[in-house]
Length: 206
Ligand SMILES: Cc1cc2nc3c(=O)[nH]c(=O)nc-3n(C[C@H](O)[C@H](O)[C@H](O)COP(=O)(O)O)c2cc1C
Image (cartoon, rainbow, N blue to C red; front, side, top):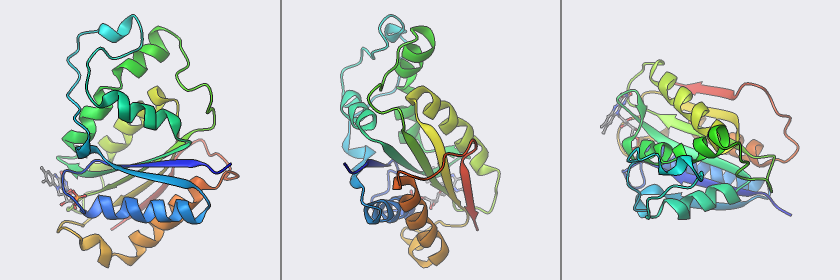
């Protein structure tokens, strides 16, 4: 049975740079035989966490919107590819709203000691992030945020593809190395026999 790979494009810009890299990574996963699904976060209506603590008793978010729909996709996938532009040194606001709604996952795991995805123990994820500047430090926040999120989601943090100095819409297509690495990392992520490493595989390009 082929692995399911879900790619989540979080940028508000349609067909932007992180989106194009994500689709390249999904093409790599498909080449490895995976069943791939691409979603744009902006197609889901998801509000921010209201810190009502309603999930602390059940591990389930009490807000009713499209969050449940995207969460079930994430829990149903063997592999996740999460793509974000860097906005003010971190993930974009749209991505952060999704991540903060993960407080119910945190509650389930750490307060209630519940396992949220028992059918898929071997889940792993990759992050694609890029920004217009040459600052390498802009990925520090992305890395910390995603590590914390993936811990709550019960997925292993397998790889990063971080790219500097990509600004104008579509410019990433000129960055042959980034496109190549996205395909390669997507393919490796979807290869069931890839050995797990303790730290994420890092590819940082300028
Ligand atoms: C609100 C906003 C904040 C940004 N902040 C940063 C930043 O902190 N560092 C950086 O290198 N680029 C920053 N950028 C530039 C974007 O990361 C860059 O244009 C990127 O290519 C956008 O990717 P996308 O096409 O996938 O949305 C910012 C852009 C916007 C609109």
